[in-house]
Length: 169
Image (cartoon, rainbow, N blue to C red; front, top):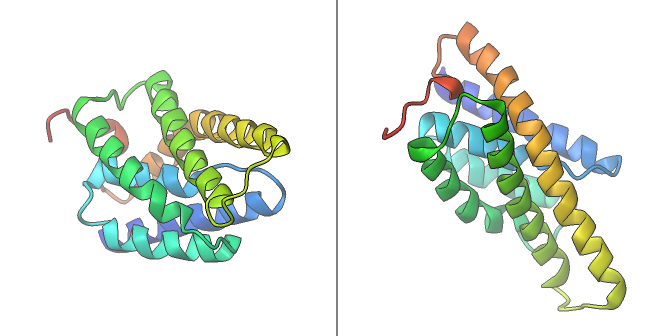
């Protein structure tokens, strides 16, 4: 049942990110959900689902370079670090972690934009700054809300919650 919960929460974050992306908002919901499930359950259990759904996200955006798979090796160690040393109880600390995850996801998206054609011009600089700012701001605002929502559902289903994570596990 826990695997179904992980798959559903990650998949819904992916769908919400694609929907928001189609209206022009770059909110890294998939990477934030990956951060959440990795902090709560470790990296081994959700890894295969994260890689599979990250590939689906890149295909949905039509990326020729897999930005989600590029961001995953940066986000998962951050989540494991946060699991051991971070503060999972306060919204300000969650916002800081969310901003870091959003920045990493936006950086991967920038690399996916620049690397395939290896093109860079002056007009792209403003777009890159906007992408990084949107990623960091979106991650910082959304992760505390995502933690509240997913924790409420996890509590109802009697699963581990983000706010119950103890340091050193």
